Image (cartoon, rainbow, N blue to C red; front, top):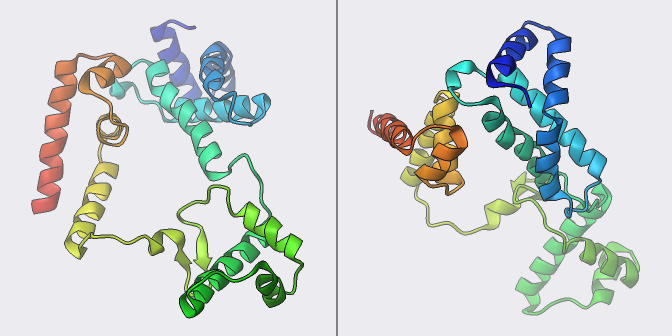
Length: 239
C-alpha cells in the first residue's frame, strides 16, 4: 500500500486527468479490493465479476475523494468498494429470471389474489393453466421463479404503476412521511464526511467508537460531529 501523503498526491493528479496516477492508485489498492471481495465469495457471483465490481467502487472512490474529509483514502474507499458489490447482489441478483416470466408470474399472482377474494380459497393449478393458456408444468415453473427474492419496488400492477411496497400496510401519517422526506433531503445535503457519520450511525447501526475507528478519528470527535448534525436536522424539521 502507498503512504498516505503519496496517495493524496496521486489523487490530486488523477483529478487533474493524469491516467498514470489513477493506474498507480488502482495497482497499489488491488490488495484492498481482494480483501473485500473475499467476504462475498459465497454469493454465487464469479470471482472476476466481484473484482470488476470492486474496481468500479475503487475508481468511484478515487474520483470522489476529497482531502477535506480528513480520513485516510483506504477508510473512504472500503465502503465504496463494498457498496458497489452489495448493490449488484441486491439489485441484479445471482438468479436470473426472464422479464417475460416475471411479468407472467405477476399476472398469475394477481389472478390468485383475486380468486381467493371471490372464492375464499386457492385456485387449482389446472384453473390457472386454463386462465393463461399454458400447461400445468409451466404454471409450476413460473410459480417457482416467484419464490426468489423480489425487490420491494418490483411492479405488480403495470396499469396503475404500483409496486409491491405499496401493498405493505403502514401506520405512518402524512406528517410522519413529510418529516421523513425532509430528513432524507437534509441528510443528502450534508457534506460527505457528515453524511457518512449519519449513515454509519443510524442506517448501519454502528457505535460512535466503531465509526471513529473506521474514520481514523477519536470517539469524542464523532460525538461532536453527530451532535452538530442533529442540531442541523432539527432546524430542518422546525424551520
